[in-house]
Amino acid sequence: MTAIQPSPIQELSAKNDVEFNNVFRDNHLRLFHYSLQLVGDREDALDITQETFLRLHRHWARRDESRPVVAWLYAIARNLAIDQLRKRGTRNETEEDPNLADTANRSPEQTAADAAVRKRLWAAINELPTPLREVILLKDWHGMRYAEIAEITGTNTTTVTSRLYEARQRLRKQLRGYL
Amino acid sequence: MTTKQTPQEIELLISAYLDGELTQAEVQRVRLLLEDRADYRQVYEEMQRLQQLTHSLPMRNPPDERMQAIEQQLAVAAPRRIGFWALWGGLLLWAVYLAVLFINNLRVPTIAEALVGLVAFGLVALFASVAIQRYRELPHDRYRRVRK
Image (cartoon, rainbow over all chains, first blue to last red; front, side):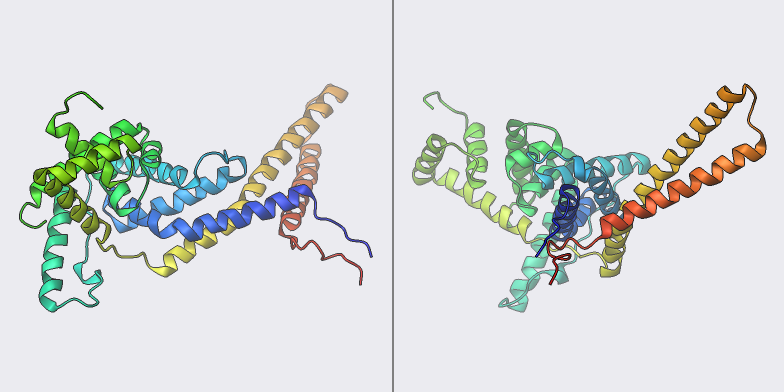
């Protein structure tokens, strides 16, 4: 019985394809949401998501495996979003649909109250300056660690710590009476 | 941490404590402060509620068909890249062929010679790109050629 082993290139190519597909499957929705939070327009967010994965795919075989892929992915999307915003000159408000919220085990009154708070919170987040808005969403919505946020935003963890604090202070002020 | 800290510095620590980003010594300090001071406890609880609310903000998903289209585009991106390199490789070979003709004969190649070279190297480039693509698409099954 003779077995012909696949060549190293073949094995590497197959491994790369599987890993890339996993990254796409695990991150495409959150990347779309991140892009939408940055540019506030669904079509632009879809274009950014598509272009981000195309760029990632282009450099996938030559990637630095010691660098976290998710942070790299978000950093590409962020750069594309900044370019898009520069071209457009304005940023739309990120849309929010209170009807999408989980209303299980909630009374109609509680559901209505939650929707009102969320609406107010979205408005307050949208009023934040971009550097503060992006750190609060990366931390509290996407659940990133400080080191990942620093990598994505091209800053350091000290800056992330102070921006998060500043963002939270402003949001607490805006939502006084609701928290 | 022996120096006196301002309320802003302590609130900044509380914010980082909420995120689990403090050192063990800082965690101990914040825990003591939260036990002792109702005003800092209130700050912590408000930040915590804010974090929960932000985390639960709903966002619409993109249409499935658009995401599938992106996935398909990624699947064809690799063959397109091979075609791009094959095109440039073929053109480079053609240019080298024309240069060799020029050096050997000490005259500008005729249109017929240039066209023959173009067609020949075009076919080579096409064959190479198809061969590379077929090679990449081979099933990556370790046992596919095992004799029964």
